Image 1: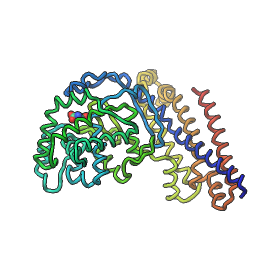
Image 2: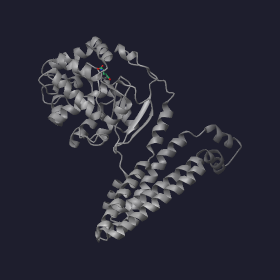
Image 3: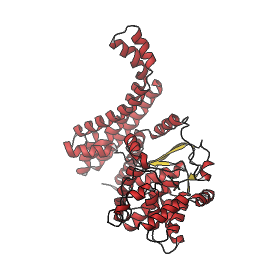
Image 4: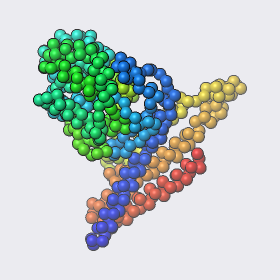
Length: 444
Ligand code: GLN
């Protein structure tokens, strides 16, 4: 192969990778999902500011923003994602991360425990409830409820309070990908009023969870809760967990990938305290809330290409694996998006048709179908468009289509043919993208 051919091939491969990467990212249209979620909850006025920490009562309750950071480092936002609020209990996740990074997952399990307490975040009854097992080698607390969290803070190693603090703020900075600072008014306000947490700290020392200096642990815990973050910081922190411990924006590895599942596990069991079950029932996502107003959730979805690899392993190379992958993805996609539409059907319209004495079929075609038809056509076209692009790419892992020809060409060292096939893939994808864009614009 000549040098020129090799350079040319390199450029084509780079192009193909970036085009397909971009198209994959586009496949689920995350911006639209974030905008939809934003609109859906925009007018929700439930709940109220936490006021047991006086500074929190003063925070503007209308602050509202959603940020999504993907594992390929894209930042998608809606609303106010720049105003800082105090991180509060969400910090428990990252201080725990520091402890497991430093001392291993077993350290938390042995000293604090990883069970759900089923109690409120600052419950003292929960401490008493598990008291009998303290010292028997099987603690049943959790690093995401106050008693366990204050104990976890006490476990961060350091010969002075400053050294411990630098590690705590350091790991928060690394997860967020920027230098964070403490909101001093919140810190002062909580430090003046945190007698309950002090009592918990003293109890945890008495029961052996904290080894010494519970006052320092409570103070540092209060400081970590007062770190200022905005929605984008929180999303980046969550995305770092989703990306196996590497910050997808800065690309810095913050924790070992093997230690991340332990953190996600306690988020699932106790991230929302006594409501963790309810939250998990509805969302299926490990999450963590904070009384400062923030909440994070971590989702690790399977890309189609991974699903295709699994199906290739099950059914062997060829178009069948590709077809099953696309069918699988299409059913999931359409049922999820149409389910929302079905929920929004106006029963009055359907009732009006029924009241005319219409048959079941007429009721369906005049009362129901017109309400979901536009969306059904729109979504089907949109999915067809995604499938078209993906079928070009799925072949690369052996799931049929033109990608198989590409594989064979590579296997036979026929780089000129491979380059031509890559060009054809880019061509097909670009034409499909352009034409379905035109059709969609017309339908809308
Ligand atoms: N700093 C708060 C406290 O300990 C955190 C509570 C929370 O966010 N749930 O009271």
